[in-house]
Image (cartoon, rainbow, N blue to C red; front, side):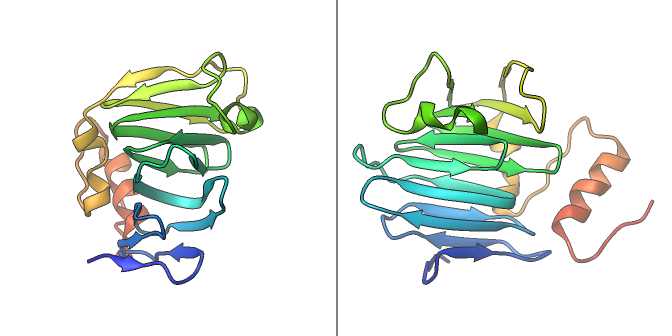
Length: 182
């Protein structure tokens, strides 16, 4: 069930998923251990993903861009469905529907008014990009992905394919109160 946002902060704890409808009808689905701050103005819809992972279903509004700041990377959408995961060492953006432009944080101006595609990386459905933290010289590499699998966490599922047991346990532990030790 959707909750209408009463404050500008969405916070979840271990084992908790929350779906919130924002003032413009956009929907944020926050995974466990996530902190999201929302700042809407007449000019823009700004979301700050402080930690964790969030899926965004963005209502179209050509006059107010929807910009997600995940620290080392920013993503801009006009009307689309995409996920952003912020980890200590990287940020991952995955697009399920529509189009998203992604830049590193120091290039934020390229998303402000009209998207500067000479700087921004454009993603469409079933594409993703991983932005390593503190490595500004590495070029962004767009990957083809199965967005349904890559974003399964947004509906409380953990789908693993080629992960080691250690990686699988780390993903489980990041989202749950009950912890597995190996």
